[in-house]
Image 1 (cartoon, helix red, strand yellow):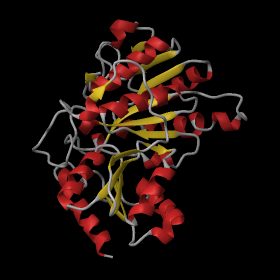
Image 2 (cartoon, helix red, strand yellow; image 1 turned 90 degrees about the vertical axis):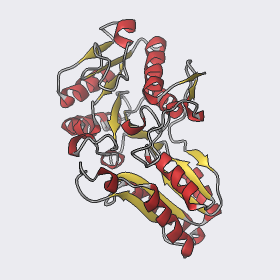
Image 3 (cartoon, one colour; image 1 turned 120 degrees about the horizontal axis):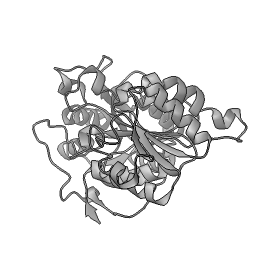
Image 4 (cartoon, helix red, strand yellow; image 1 turned 45 degrees about the vertical axis):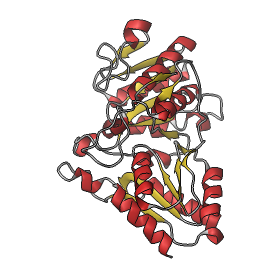
Length: 336
């Protein structure tokens, strides 16, 4: 076991898979010689060669299209979209080609592509380096959607994603690359000595579709993913309530059994995510929970989310859900 930050854990996962499977290749903008803008692929080209880890032009559509073709022909491409905000030029290839090839061919063909992309706010990136567009892809049948939150689950989930025969959109909360984010922009801890930063150097997997219970509780269930998991952790401590915090880890498929069992126990639910409220994945979860847990709910489900506006630059900390907003939601569901 080695204490790793999230960047190092992702790098370790990629290194393991390059060693284990000769069909795995890695490419994207600046991922080769430079090692990625966040250094996630640092050293991999030097170790594994330019034929397996290489740079591409600034063409997200071209990256996705070539990955689709390579996957059809037996390779396992792992491509990086430098920021999730720039994934949209590749949207047609992802939604109309990658997501549909297994179904349109009656299972005869598939393309096991993993698309990694840093997402979310918290780095003062403004409009085009801060969005969290996961619900754009959870609405597309044929895609798996994963959102890691710690070094340990980042590595295990990425390995499972690469080994999946279906395409995976793998979101990485860039605010948590070098340390967990608890909602205070002036307090910037690292992953040093954090239990979730103890990562095996060797190969291991976390199954897709399996949630993680971060904190156990009996009065309210709090659901989240990505950087917001840590903000929720702080909010629960601030609230003084006995809340069960669940990190979904996988959005498609999501772990309905773990979520439903928790809400049957607590009778209350708060859902937290960075993306805007309208049509966010929290809305899908809320509807699904209502269908399955109606007679167990003691109060309406609350959502704490980003606002229905473009992501701001100067008011970033007002946009992102913070502990105070989450504490308020927990208090409100406890009142009913």
